[in-house]
Image (cartoon, rainbow, N blue to C red; front, side):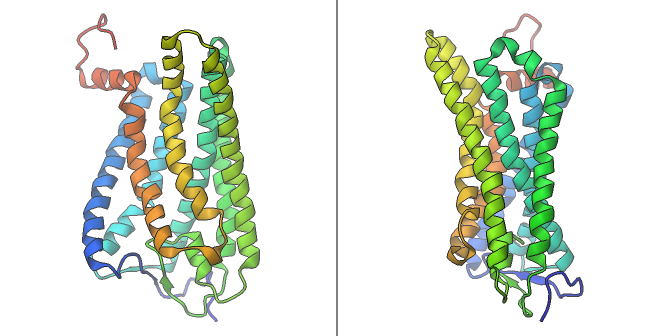
Length: 315
């Protein structure tokens, strides 16, 4: 009986979409385009949030962290995926599989909590605008981001060893395009009820608790917006939250379905496409969502490229 934590194991085989050769060629081109968009878009937001003094605010501090997360998140998956889609070799070493699992768990869990932190920032900005600068001081922002990262590492340190230690009885085929926890659990030839229960419990804590906080924050934001009498004031308040709400919907809409269900009812084909969506499409869409209607970011780009005509020009 081979153990998942035995580093002498031969390479795993990532089945991915190998049963659909034509689809693989289409996916290769599509994933490559989305990956380039994710790299350029998220790197640009990180650069702007660092070099432009006008973006040295809590909102863009959190947005820069989100972009860094998305950059790492998609990079932990896409290069291996492109290698598998572009040729007959579908293997990944045991060490590479474990590393991918840890990175995937850390970054995904951290993003769940970070989105809740960003919703709290928006809550303070809309509901307590006069106290915003005092309340969201740099020390608090740094502590909130540290908590988000700490939750991500804690989740990975709890779940990854349990997943890799499961017996697989010589099974090497991972019915997925990456080393993801549900796919690795389903490979096991032993009782996985305890691991599944632990994964479900942590999923509730790291998915539903942040989501509940997000919903509470936006409930209070909605109540505050309804008290604003002017239409322009309502539009301004909603404009500060619409981008974050769109990102939350994209991320949570897919990841909750993926992880808050028993492994026995896990549909691999459906899971592959959902995972593809939130590991490839969402990280490339986030920069567009945050920049298309964001005057601050557009102004920062213009200043960086020297397109701003002068100090009197309005953004």
